[in-house]
Image 1 (tube, rainbow, N blue to C red):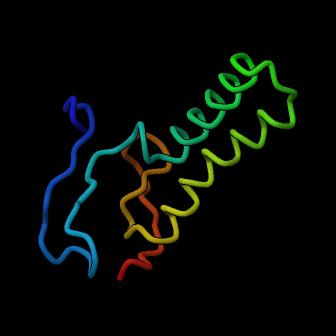
Image 2 (tube, helix red, strand yellow):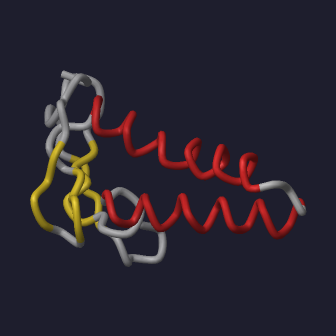
Length: 93
């Protein structure tokens, strides 16, 4: 977002607790993007720490859990792929 690749805007009242409208976030908040980030984190941990596969899988799962938690609380603004079919349960409301 700071580099202008992804887009966010402030829309007062869009949710009960947060004024941010994440209207274009395909790299950091999409399901496919989150899977790729999780795999990259697991591989990086495996290579940098010379860890076993189990520990690397746990790191990958921990990174992916961010998307699952976002899915619970975000309004439907999380794309499954690129900028399409947005999901979210909206518990922030």
